[in-house]
Amino acid sequence: MFRSAIRSVVAISLGALMTTLAAAQDYPDKPVRFVLPFPPGGSADAVTRELAERLQAKGNGTFLIENKPGAGGNLATGYVVKSPNDGYTILVGVTGAMVINPELYPNLGYRPETDLTGISMLAQAPVAIVASRESGLTSIKELVQRAKAKPGELSYATNGVGTSHHLAGELFKQKAGIFMLNIPYTGTPGALQDIAGGRVQVGFLDLTASLPLINSGRIVALATTGSKRPSALPNVPTVAEAGYPDYEAMTWISLVAPKGMKREQIDKLNGMINAVLAEESFKKSTAAKGMEAVGSTPDALQSFVTTEAEKWRGVIRGAGIRIN
Image (tube, rainbow, N blue to C red; front, side, top):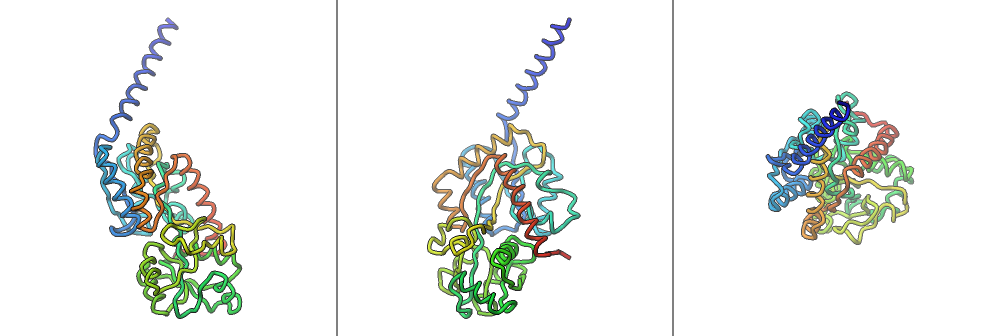
């Protein structure tokens, strides 16, 4: 009787395992939606669309882009958190919505660190620190010297309060021991126009959007904020190279899913994605957009998100940033 019961349990367990494996092999057998917290047209949108097209071209399934902008990324993030965890609604997780907003908006009702599960990193990019021609600034050293000589007279443009670009600026202020006033714009284009026009001296801005003005000589690139120089600006030093070796501030995009998505599905999707990210043509295409294609394991992404959340939480609290 006891042996019979054991055989029954084993049979049931094997049956469940076979069903799980079969489900993973069939996945995805219907369209997978990549929910993006931005409108069409930006670098994150372009990278994700190309990824979806290549996955589909390889016969990995049908992949669709759903743009759901609003509330600084909170709309799309909250939507995916509450979606079924069946592997067919995936969030394009970005720096602001994943690791900055939970500290700025304490009443979100969710925490990306615990309510979403990592699939893979997709791409990363540094922030560009740029200056107007009229400012006369040509290096980070000169920027710091001027800020210390005339505290409060320097201002820097960003694409809004509490954005990853704003926090990159605040982190730099903390590391360099200087004060500059943030001028938040409603987006990057207006900030770039005012820097190019000499109305604002400095900006911590999107690299992709800044490149045309840098390359045309209308604005000056002082540094980038990553640990290494981006391929798009190989002759511009990093902040670390300019004298602040413990400084790094990256923007990034990733793919994450509602908590509880089956590990077999996660691993299969991760393998598909990283195969595309490893293609030289995809790397070159992503670099042309001002980003670097970077993959990861699901666990490495989950750990990275936790570390980033802790880092930016400290910057936000140290700077006393609040969203009204």
